[in-house]
Amino acid sequence: MSTAVPADLTFDAFAPDHRADPYPAYARVRTATPLFPYELGEVPVRLVTRYEECAAVLTGADWGHGYAAGISPFRDTSAAIPGSFVRMDPPEHGRYRKLVAKAFTPKMIGEMAPVAGTVVDGLVDAALERGELDVLEDLAVPLAVAMVAVRLLGADAADGPSFRAWQLAIARGSDPDSLLGPDDISARTDAAIACMGHFAGLIAEKKQRPGTDLLSELVAASVDGDFLTEPEVIGMSLLLLVAGMETSINLIGNGMLALLRHPDQLALLRAQPELIGPAIDEMLRYDAPTQFTIRVALADTRVGEHSFRRGDGVVVLTGSANRDERVYHDPDTFDITRFTGNRPPRKHLGFSLGIHYCVGAPLARIEAEAAIRTLLDRAPELALAEHSIEYRPSLIHRGVRHLPVTL
Image 1 (cartoon, rainbow, N blue to C red):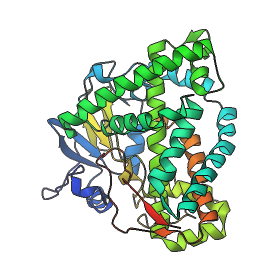
Image 2 (image 1 turned 180 degrees about the horizontal axis):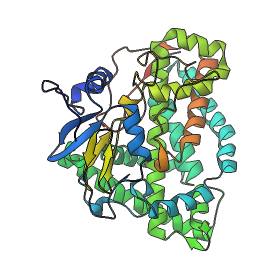
Image 3 (image 1 turned 90 degrees about the horizontal axis):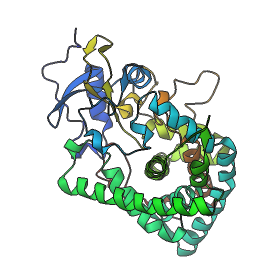
């Protein structure tokens, strides 16, 4: 049995003209069907548009990535990098997650908050002295480099520009290959090779002179005598760099843009700074850094009324699920009090759900809280300098190229 789709419904989820505001298009198809048939390149898939169905796929044991089984229709199995557990299925995924958790401790994350505050203060000092600020390039990017590349992974601050260039190329290449051009794929490959080579050198240093960074912990981490191999540590470092930087940069950029476009919410957050936590949750729901993820049926299964065969692919539109009116009242309204009170709505999918819930979510929150709280505290006249905002070409990752503001 299949979910009926109106014959006259057309929807190109990945058209370039959706980048500025994909949400009206999401709403049209979400209203009509939870599972929209779509040709992703030459791959027939279903776009999952509603919260219930998205959550079912993200948490379902019959869904995964299918690389190890050789059944993924989205990208060659050879493209999966050792240690990149975001693309793994159980039981391999559980092994990596345990080892990362062994190193990525609450204590380590807790120690990052004052570091983030110090970094942000320095960046805002420089911006106030200049009298201008690009929230992306002058705040979010250098903060992410400092926290993820330098503090978390133990890299040299002087290599920040290289890490940013690699991160951009690899993040752009995170879209399904059918949506990329040859230059994008080549740039992704070159960046991954260069970045992994750099991490190989860092790992050799950490083996000789361990530090207090996560990379040193990953080199030494074990669970029941099980250690990560060097290729696995390299792959995991690459994942943490790209995902960690991409998520925090776009969370800060998209979140600040939402606040600046909704001055009533900006004023409310200034008046009640204790709302920063719920405000970040609303930013993650309203305009998430990640708009979709892909999954493959690992066995014959069903979602709602639709049957899937082993190897069938779906695109889980978490950006659409986060605006599902069946779950969120008035979902197109930006409301920083939405996730407060005794009966908040269901958890947003801004950090995904299930076994692939973002391992770096606590660090992304720390960075966003430090950046946004400090800007609001120290720049009382903060306002958009330009009202025409350009988005980066990536489709899975949603973020602006620049966000210039006046101080």
